[in-house]
Length: 247
Length: 262
Image (cartoon, rainbow over all chains, first blue to last red; front, side):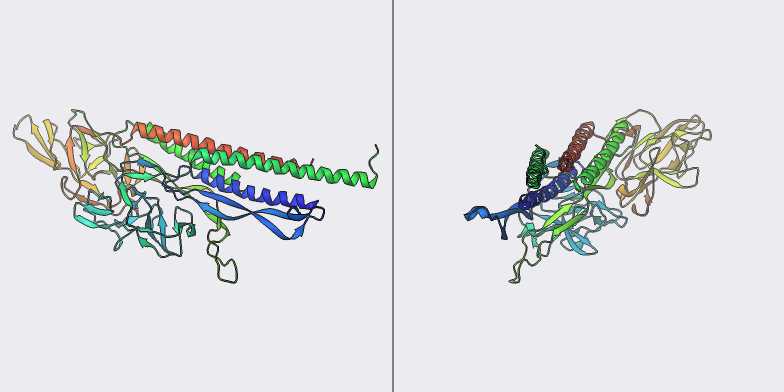
């Protein structure tokens, strides 16, 4: 009898985690360059526990596990801002950010300059060009960034924004502040375009997230009810067998 | 359940977003105003199952792990320092900058502030001051018998007086620029202060070194675009509502757990 409770519990725990993932997606619905997550479930057949009063394949108990996360890297929508340091990538590529922990990758192209004129990410880490960090002089004006990432100013061509891509993006982990990390060696991206004056929006689809959320809540409530029923069954059994039932 | 806190972080972020947008809209008609944009970043992640860890002794690894995020934070409210459109005013002491420069203003406290708002006036002594009476640097004094004032693109101030019909130079307007003008600190009254992240000011004559031209009888309008602000406002409001929905859904889940035991 406890199996029903435990199986129900395994489902509820995964559903709570799913809710956490959905809440995080929803909280980042307006975060530029955000990529949404989704939890995957699988059936976990219990190797040892078996129902003694069922036979054949029914005897095996299956629990729910959430072994992995599916990260959607699909393109987010574009928003025109007209700001010369807002860059968006169209295609499969990443900007390279030099953090104290090493190179990190981001799709958030709301770049800025620091006090020395260096091109940085919103968190203040240098954004790398083909030859390392890009620094503009105090006299330079009119920063233009071409589709291939070539930067030109009033002083001529100043290098190119480095774009990289990865074979296996699902190995990338999020580090917060729109940075992604991976152990895989980056390759130079070839088929991506840089758009200036544009920001890539979050790829969270509110409709999908809300639908998934409703699904999650309903599934959770249903399991709660099943647990409640199981509990009542047991209560009945105890009452009858102990003879405490006065009727 | 983290989803409650996560959704709350989303609601707080959108609330701040609405504050920023409403300030932009309120300053739509403010001379030299530069719009501000709230930028969001995702918060920390918790690794429940780390990607790339060994899943067996045979050297197989976990291809995709489980990372659960804790919501959103406001990374910055950055100022978009793009050029505002120039409106003709026909007032002699209205100046606009077409380019990256700022006017330098000395505050009563002795500090130096910078502004793009060139709606200047003269004080009792004929000095060029802002609408608050703060002196424009370097100080320019217009003789009190001046009949007309001409300021050219390079910032040279010339006057024609009652007694002398030939224009005379009475001063030179200087402009200042910063490497990172988005790093300036706004202190209200259309004024900005230098900060460690703005870089140090470089001063010069207008029309040189990217400082921009000075245009007389023009004012720079705010660079707020009403349509994009309103669409951002709608997006922020809807995002707020959706995060509120997440809270009520999490609440529903928790109450169904609480109701198991009756």
